[in-house]
Figure 1: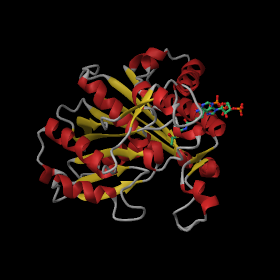
Figure 2: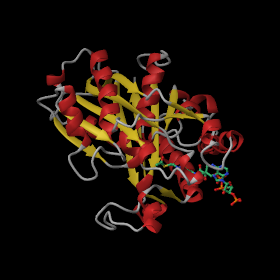
Figure 3: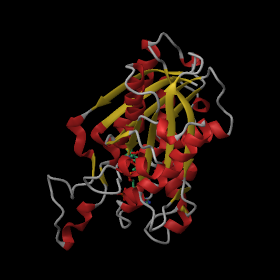
Figure 4: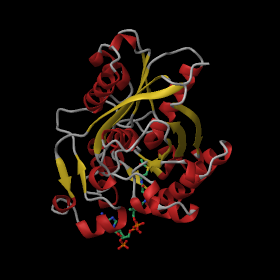
Length: 328
Ligand code: ACO
């Protein structure tokens, strides 16, 4: 059986940086509140002409270039996004596939919110293990700024725009590989984090009073409690199932939503904070892009050595959650 591994990484964050101070001139908030409640200091915001496919194309082309793999060799383009270029179709993956000239590739989007990259990586690994694909691009890309209510301080301070990508392919040495994954969902709490309007449940017609339903809404406390519990379950399950302890793991790469969620998980499981890679201070919550963005940043900082074991842990709307155990 072919063992799938992450062969390369790439990312892109738009240059426009919106600090907490600047945000405080737009909505009733402060740097002190945002940083003390979330750990966030800034976020990057896409230019008006940039959509999810534009950010994702740059991140994926960087991953392809770094691996030295030609676009025609890619068998599948998987795009995790909650902010696709178009509401229903075409899939953002098809647009990226064309931008990159991956002429032989299947292309589809994955809708699992902030857990989307974790779902995508496991999907890619399964296709490769089954011998049905050799090279799969897994991309997380989000232009969250376009679906936020910029008058709602409960949500608009939390999110940012970015893209991250990995190329998954046959392990070059049998040692580097995607070892295991756990994917879950708690659909009974699906409405805790949602964008009510625009789908087949509440189609896209609205009165001025209903305009807020076109943007993200969230039960923050419910999502917070879910996130801490979900992170703990995934980390414990992946360790136990693979006969590992936390000492066998070089880094946990969590979805970058809120530093307090990660601190609570760290305390609950007795895992030192240094084990968790964090970059949310600079980028805020970039949904499906946050884990591949962090992986690429770690790769470029040379924090990861061949043979290091890492755990990814995602959680988000759905409510979905999951994680991957990877040997770098
Ligand atoms: N600036 C100033 N004050 C604010 C702001 C803000 N940006 N936002 C809320 N407040 C106020 C509230 O109005 C409230 O005031 P009140 O007491 O007068 O009513 C007060 O601060 C406290 O509000 P809480 O909601 O209790 O604040 P809490 O400490 O719970 O933090 C937060 C809120 C940060 C949203 C937290 O609940 C959280 O992180 N939840 C998880 C959210 C998350 O991670 N979502 C994304 C994950 S899934 C995905 O990525 C798609």
